[in-house]
Image 1 (cartoon, rainbow, N blue to C red):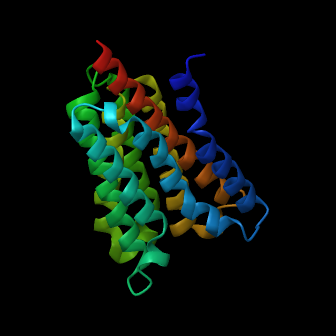
Image 2: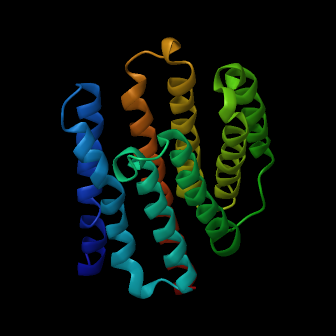
Image 3: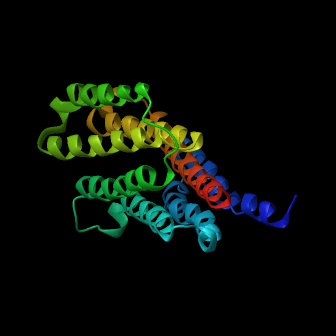
Length: 221
């Protein structure tokens, strides 16, 4: 195996390892859950930074890092901004992260037209508002707007490398489970807490891996 290929694989080990540890910590209600969560997005940035000198155009690097940075802020909104309202800040930061992904997918990484089956994301958006709307209260407009952005990410991801497409599905799944945990907590069993982060870490990891592969393929061609 060429040395660079081996390095590309090894650079993913910290993120994968800490993702597994974090999900297990959540499932076992370990004290490791909080500190391991804080490491996830910085560790996912390592493969991006490894490829940074070869990423063209430079906007691809900027958008990927912006998406990860604001995802990190969303993950740790309560820790980084303890004086602010946690849930609105989470929606804001993740909304910015999703906009960065949408621009990245639509402008730089698209390889096909939007598939017809992505209409299911519109159905998902309407269904989530119908089911959760009565429990959301004053945040209904913010949640609705965030849902549109999330559906947009999944839709644009379907135009890209298959890893990105699958990553978009996992990201959508994660936020869907989280929404039920936030607004209908009595209906959600405890195992859905690690399920949120399992699907989240898979989604983010697949999106980044797919983006790097797609960018590398475009450069080589």
